[in-house]
Image (tube, rainbow, N blue to C red; front, side, top):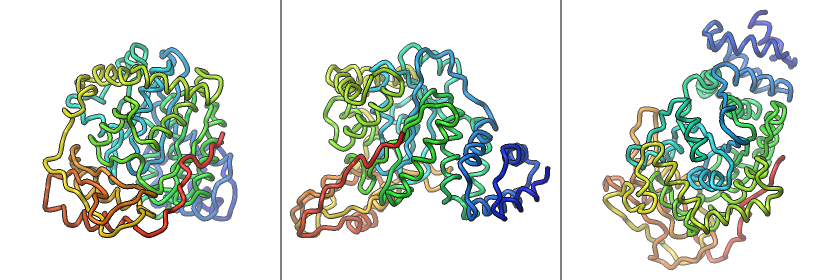
Length: 434
């Protein structure tokens, strides 16, 4: 078998066999096939696309290119959740304790963020001493003991995807539905869950800007998961404005804690309940979504979800007292109001621009080597549909370096559109793909 023949076959619109896909993934992972040949194949796939069997074969080949995490020692049905990312998306911080408190074990691998805010791992490190470098034995023991553990993604999990993504990123071949879906799902399959719930974002702050593309991606990933024998469901949700009010690492942790106390933002709470209900149904802990939502609301009301977060933080080296006293989490040196330049309704917020503002304050990474300031970020005071008076606060900047204030303020004001007419409210949950 020759890589040249595989490239030419796909260039001419042919369908690659499972053996051909396995050959190029194995060869590339081992360094036996050069970047320039795989770049040519990625470009051929970009233009000719992939069939469902090809996409499934690619996903499985990448999943099996490294370690396949064996979670069989964990009791119960393991349900994983993945979000395609967005601004203010702190869902895992609140959702996982809620689900664990309802009896579904959460054994999750998460990554660090590269972009406007940190990833789940970075946010959890707002708790001083929090340790994500767990051994496999400690990881499994924690899940069996308290129902939840989150660790950093290991280098040996789907290494082919890591190599392929880096190559696609510099060869303009990222934006292909099959390649995006296989990249996400290869890591999910390798992480060992029995069932997978996907949160696919759509809107200005999402990777998939249109609902049509988001639904197509959701359908592609659900097919892959089901093909691999994992019960998979996707929730397509709105990201045309930030989720909740807080954008920034420790600020988002505080908002997640508020949500577990029953005091969280309405949109964020609703999304957690929707995703959580899908996880409980997938894990056979509830017969339907309504029953599952009632269970989730109960663990918030009786405090067991908040207690579960405290147990989780303590088990991984953090101070559980900070869960009950979040004022001990990192705090910025200055809080500065951004004032509305005019009176009227907030008609639109360019969501990704808000994310960039958090990045400019130091809340995210521009490169893998960048240091994150866990204390900084923004708290929105007005969202789409809200009425604002001229001079009233649209948002607050939590800032340590005041030299950044002017540029961030200008960019944030440019992200807001204020007008006379109240806009129609946007639907948070667009659809569910199962």
